[in-house]
Image: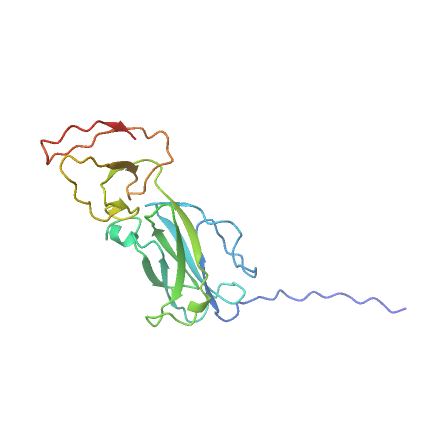
Length: 231
């Protein structure tokens, strides 16, 4: 018969990433998963608390979500949809309340640390753009956006008062929008008071907040007293 042949094992073959094709955004709760359909684990993004910093990573990848670590690295701008954060910005604040942050990738990746959101009740959509030339570059069309849910701080930090004509504006520095409407002498009207976190996000889901509040009219000494009430 035919003698059996001795098998042979080749040396390990190093697999390299293909040419750059897209940018990837990773938020807390996600991990990279190269060569998969989505390029990341299937975990849902972790819910973030208003005002609390977290990290967001941008990667330059090939069409198969392998991180490209060699060659020219683009400058990347990370942005999100919470338009209220810039109004809370301070040069010395940590975390950083900035809607847009930029930087060049190093070995195909960059982590933007201490990103902060301000508006609870909504979800912020993050995206990364190649801005090497100061404008969206060739990788912009392949950006994967990522949605991060946001909740208010767990405890109340302040009271918010709303007069007729004013409406809630969570996440803004005033917490309200609109102008108070004029009132006629001796005509009753309603005043709303609610507990809020630092960023004027209403806290309506905490039954333990039952503080007694009193509305006063310091500029009108002739106004009748207003009864106190519990939140």
